[in-house]
Image (cartoon, rainbow over the protein chains, first blue to last red):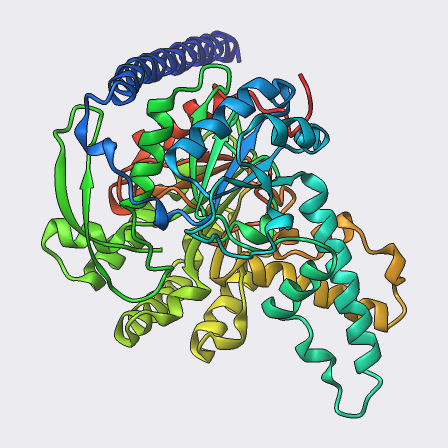
Length: 281
Length: 233
């Protein structure tokens, strides 16, 4: 019996030491990952300045027609700085973007929309253009102001419309209620409650969080999502690069094989390459 | 650590092309990778792992590829039951079951039944899943409850819809972290409603090459994020 006590003590200390070892290993991994991200960030910043100065030729021309609808998601901490939003919209106008949806979860940008529209030359509310698709002939940028109330709350209202339709129709003998819950019906119901159902091609997220922050879920199906970092330190070169990269992307929307040619600059110690890719999802 | 990690297993075909293999061999490698990674998924205290294995849009792929995938899922669902039972992992399959072959449906029911009582570790396999379909079926489910008089129309709110989504099978229905391999930066109709505040991580590695190192890098990256769920700091 006496033999058990030292064994228990030994196993306790082995456990403590291995826990400490694992903790140190995990912290070491954190340091390595942080260093890699720091180096990556420095590289990105240098590249961005080079793009802004026009030193990298491939970014000087962008096929902007491929970007029909852009979404910009802004963290609420920075949504209060309207000047930065205005600057970003001016850059987008310069690049040739025709339609942008501006989102922050609390609707702060919605409250400042008059000021923003006044300060961005040639801008207008998307609703006032009366167009669902961008028109290449239209000058200026059409802006849609979006908040969380356009996300889940809107779906709830639209769901109520479908529900009323279902309850009404299920009293009929042919029981048409079963066909009410389709994507096209919900799209229509969302339009009735005043929501735009157009899917953004590209979403730029400004803020510390790499998340879409509650952007209307129904509209996010195939949207390319790019995290741009802090709005306070936004760079024109990074914006140009993100849009340029998007125009080089081909989606097959989960369908059959499609050959694409994609020019790709791979950072993290690989040389630039051109590959033929077969897309998955 | 996140409680729920969602993974879009993208890149099997590109991996096969790079390795000089056929597409079925790419999918087989992807399936093996899932099995190899399962214990790593839960090794750091994560409760739920969701795997997007087949989307509604994938039905439009070539018929032989789709048939191969269905056969692979069927094989997996029958042969791996002892493994999941040994490791007390609950398996839940979400998606639209109407188009799934009967033989695979039987396998799904079998594996779900065999593991339904386990807690603490859960894998959610999304087969023929679409985020939009999930929202619609939640609305339809509420409509049927309203018709039966269980709830009133005016009671319907976000919470009720969330409670009807297919992820209700999990104690943690909203993923904290979503990983999509192969470098594509979109969520492709996966967990649209549930991912409002999910951290999105897009590594460039193809799924069959996604190893423990990449997984821990994703978790490390997640730990460095500052999550505020839309609130002010």
